[in-house]
Amino acid sequence: MKKVSLLALGAGFLASLAFTPEPVLAQDSTLDIVKNRGMLRCQLGTPAPGFYALSDDGKWSGFDVENCRAVSAAIFGDPDKIEYQSVTSAVRFTAMANGESDMLSRTTTWTLFRDTQLGLDFTTVNFYDGQGFMVTNDSGVNSAMELKGATVCVLTGTTTELNLTDYSRTNSLDITPVVFEDSNVRDSTFFSGGCDAITNDKSSLASTRAKAPDQSIFSILPETISKEPLGPVVRQNDSQWKDIVLWSLFAMINAEEMGINSGNVDEMKASSTNPEVKRMLGVEGDLNKGLGLEPEWAYNIIKTVGNYAENYEEFMGPKTVMNIPRKGSVNDLWTKGGLMYSPPFR
Image (tube, rainbow, N blue to C red; front, side, top):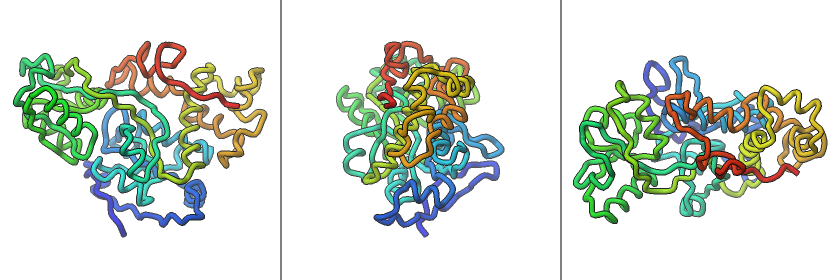
């Protein structure tokens, strides 16, 4: 049995788990494996507010969790037929390549190397991010360019670590990386003064700050030092599975574009005269056939999970601990100045 290193989840939860990889035979599609198992295995990171939080009673929720729930809804008509796998960054790709996870949805940056040399495929982007730094207010540091000679907490095996090294060399800052495999250990080390700064994607820094006993003593510096397009990942050589994960996310984006949400999807399904709405919701046409899903696959996503805007506001918006406004940002719809775009449902 191959084991995947996991974070001890505290309070009696999942001190460690072992995942049993299922042999992926050439004739077995991931969709067939998931259907036969009756459960989607979706990989998340270690618990973090906003993207994948874990409640005291063991329930996962968050922006990236909704991608898993959308795929489950598309396949089973039920968003909760999921075994969540909390895996450290260092072994996340191994767990995918070995067949232990069916998909990965966990703040993972799309890069050329990862997309072409790890046996994996990135599907599309569900959140555009960029790397930054966070410091304590009493450090007196107001710019990343003032971090010369600083120690910086960072997760190992990430693009964040590589970007930090490049940024330090480019700007002759002589930064000393203090590396961790476990994000919670990294965060607690920073909170206790073990590093001068911490670096990560800016949304993840907001998530880290949300876990602090006193959020008001920390500031995220203004510089953004990288592009971090984040999105779900699947194994290579299963185009049907890639399409299912990809179009499940597109269904949420397209629903927002067309004004369909979890509250009005039944009315839209029953009375809309828009041909694209009818096709997407399974009222007419056979767009489901190529995916190997039932006609109402997209309806089930919107009804039980919601559209992209609903998920963003619930987990990332100004009323959440993340407090990342979307209006006019790169994460807004293309019709509103952003980059979120779905190909047509036809």
